[in-house]
Length: 264
Image 1 (cartoon, rainbow, N blue to C red):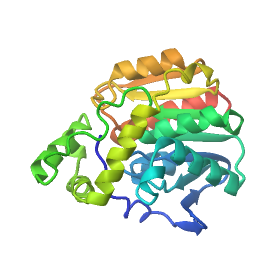
Image 2: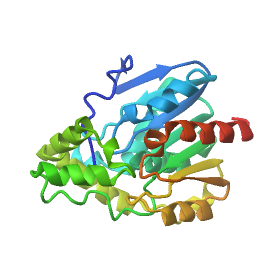
Image 3: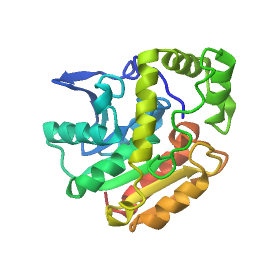
């Protein structure tokens, strides 16, 4: 799994700072909380933010502390606790969680511990069942072309991996302190496999998956759908690991129709 630098995530949006929390709120209505992954950032959800912040929802973008916690606290469980503290701090009710990759895993883990706080869960390219790709491929991290190739593999159309994206990935994996945290998160994701927990998560769940995802392959989506008792599975063709970024209009259409069908 690839990573990127988060220093530019909030450049398009007004960042609020309250205690230990950095976040952005856009719109008015039921909170939709966006949970970013290791690969990419909150800007990957631009299409979701632009549409649903105008459709009666409050889009909330917390900056997850991937690189700012102690090594001991750099894990899925602690990120879910951070999300719990944030939601409590903001006094949000009946939230909808939308998570990509690691963000989906954090959303699932939070929902497992706080099911009454979550009205709906949306996962796309989520970890939680299949972690073999997390944290790998950095033995040649000083080779820009190797990192570029790995970034391109994430998407069905390699052109989506722009120079800015590749530069961010390259910078991050060559920062030793961040790389150590990345590897810790990868190990944590493996430890927190949720196969035995998913059948007990009854929250309505929307699974949106790229048919050509090689980071979390299609069979992972099938397994999520099988194990989550109240889930709906939607496929996007010619799409890799980031459907909301690769096919934003179709992703929004699927999500909007699901929210309407579930009266959320």
